[in-house]
Length: 90
Image 1 (cartoon, rainbow, N blue to C red):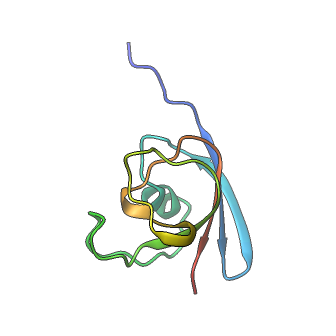
Image 2: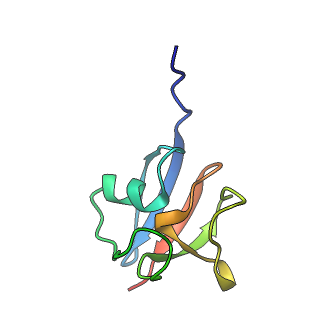
């Protein structure tokens, strides 16, 4: 029997507008943002290039994922542990 992972709330600020949707904790922040149909830069999808960098305004990430300086994270390789708010840089 497969248990459905609990849904989390992801708030994304893009160009000054907030968008809120349920997020799947088994998917990366990047994948959750893409499911919200918001444009976000990405390239390697492996946590190497930094093009998918977002600012983590609030929320907790899986401890073994990439966290960059001053609250910025690589969305392609970061998983959420709870509700979160991220800001996509202009």
